[in-house]
Image (cartoon, rainbow, N blue to C red; front, side):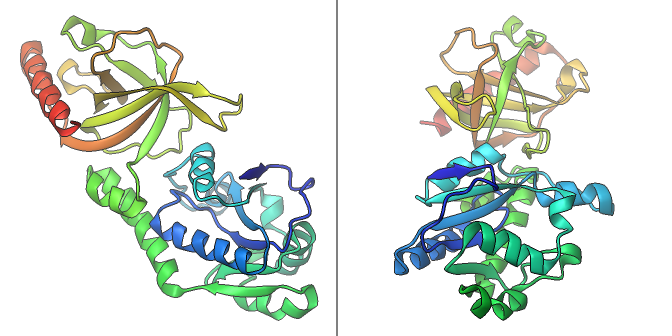
Length: 322
């Protein structure tokens, strides 16, 4: 898959089948759209093109319209990786700005969609809105079909409902520690990445050293506080802009997300104890796949009680991850 970030320097797409969306999470609902897109491209002996936005439109608009922002299921690099797995021909990342959002709906069609993509087919939801004040819709695209020589096709309502319901359900599930529901909707284990940074090294004193993770993208959704069984990959980014994660080794472990109530630390931390591992990985990137929710975080009367509970967590995690 070719990724394009400069919309003023795009190739001449061949009989492009185009769809547009945020595709946050690239979950099972989105896959139905992607499969329809690829089918249309194949019918016309053309190329499949996904148009997405960075940053997420709601992040830009929320600052000016007093609307709530959004916690992302996938960063741009994660989304790109997941879409690439589906063998789409092109992903175009459009910088979303207020200026872009303020163009008229007609300008959006003629100057953006047609001029830059020359689509043969546009696949869009009946509820998709675009242009200044969101005045553009499916009907307007239909109106200009003959003039601009494309065919607009509707994403079925049940697919759109599935996308909306799934996105909400995934976020809610992760915020409740319901990993089973989240995985069912996503089609994969939820994951996130963080850089290993210095911590207070308390874990070492009780025999459970941890990698303390700092999440670079503050809009990335982190699951509910608690203790989890996880798998993880240690690696780095192949590009300076963080556009691709390259794993170097895979491991199993357990993770704590929370404020460490036993030592009365009010800062929210993410700590991973990597099983059977003792290498120095400061500065490395760790991708964590969240597999099982073990328990809520608890406050223990003594450090010995905490150590005993962590031992039980380790046994349970190892058994679950076999």
